[in-house]
Image (cartoon, rainbow, N blue to C red):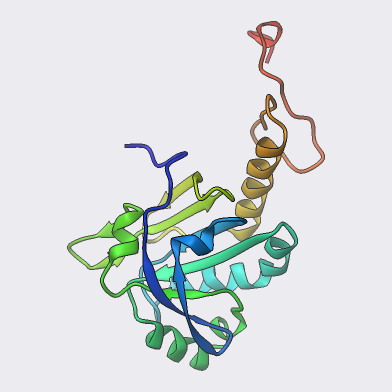
Length: 187
């Protein structure tokens, strides 16, 4: 089953965000672009490097109207403890969703059942609440926020310019393509 263009399934969760616990649901993902960023666990090794990289690039995402939600099967209390004790995680200003029941992780198809942990899944969701980008990495392979920013910009461009597509390595301001019979065999 492809997740592309599917609607985010309903969920309710508590997140740690800017010193407070807040409630988050699928409704919060609508009306703006969102990134839902799953990672295996707090207090680990690759995870803080990824979450710190997102924190370092968070303002760029915000300029694009994108909210980031990190999710692990840890609790929101664990997220707070990690935020309070790690310099890298202490930089985070986006919501850190706790998913101790695994409902959200299963909704997105990234639960490692035998471990009770999430795969490294990245989902870009459009303002209608539909998934436009899915990326799942093996546990030992960290993700790159700059590459994610590039993909988000491409998704936003395609959404705003029907009939145009972004080729490989496309960057903002570069030429796009207009698929047509005249273009067949000429790329």
